[in-house]
Amino acid sequence: MLARLHRAGELTAVYVPDSQDEAMRDLSRAREDAVIATRKAKQRLNSFLLKNGFIYSGRTKYTKAYLMIQCIHAPNFKEYIIL
Image 1 (cartoon, rainbow, N blue to C red):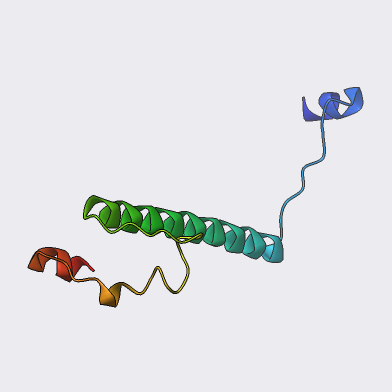
Image 2 (cartoon, rainbow, N blue to C red):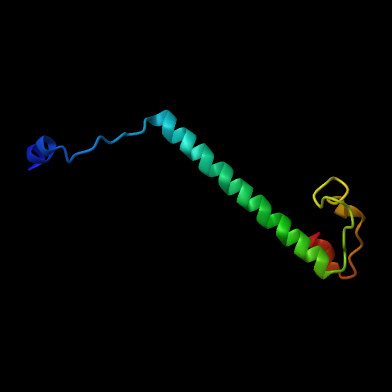
């Protein structure tokens, strides 16, 4: 059966990745996961701050000035623990 398919030209070559290719794929997947996790964390932080009335009026939200949340005084102790 396999010989017949080969004669008919219906088989295609398949590339089997080596260990370096797999390592690069793993690195790429890990980076993508880290980017997604960072974006979600920024969205959660921004949502929390907006919910509690802390609005940043600067140009970009994630500069050193924005992330200096030590200066924020949360009215509730539980919210202060979150920060």
